[in-house]
Image 1 (cartoon, one colour):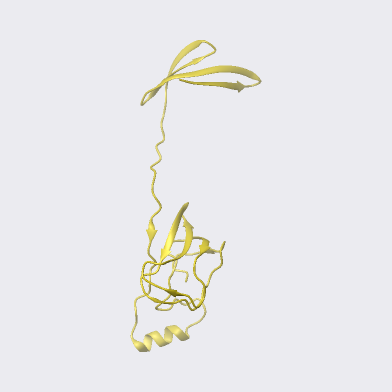
Image 2 (tube, one colour):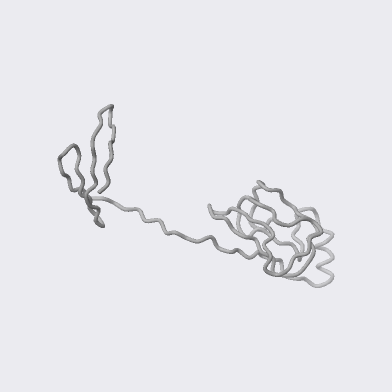
Length: 141
């Protein structure tokens, strides 16, 4: 049993919840017992997913060179991009740092969940395009 004092329009009421069933509840208010229907809104508990970054597929040497010379904001073949729109929570690497497959390079919040952004290859971090607290769109480097 759970017992509460609830105030409604400056009047206090002693409420005792005696039993909760799937679609009904039995409770007592100021000594008088009531059975009422209840509607439950279930929320599914979901563990944060480990989101792997989307990488642009490697192109031919000629196309790859054009990509490298492209305007700012163009995604290059080896860049890790945001898998979803969200906010950067924590950057775990720095420029010049070596990374290996499975290393978490940053954490981002997307759809109210914290996601680990993980690299799938060995390499050296050349440039970090975001700062902690930045909002990013899907496929942003």
